[in-house]
Length: 88
Ligand SMILES: [Zn+2]
Image (cartoon, rainbow, N blue to C red; front, side, top):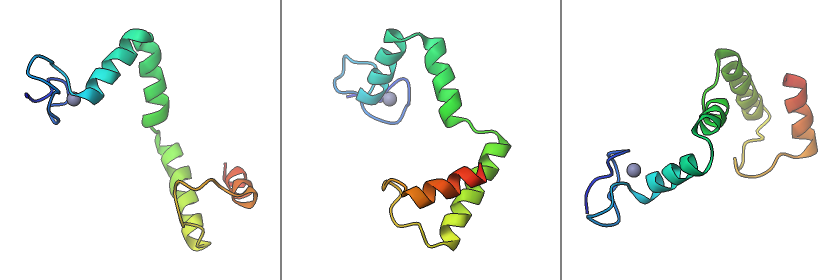
């Protein structure tokens, strides 16, 4: 086993492979789909501008004030969705 040559964090599955399983999957996705479209999607999802960060902080603070934070994976209720719409 060797260290992945892309992320330099995880081990590869065998000595003869170059990437870890996660990076291999990422690489296959980039090959399957257009790399530019993948990059645009990642930019839209992962990179936030200061305004978006402010909205997110306000939303999280409001949740904390209302004691609505129980489980982040749990879907919002209708009343919580209305609060989100008012903020945005
Ligand atoms: Zn990797």
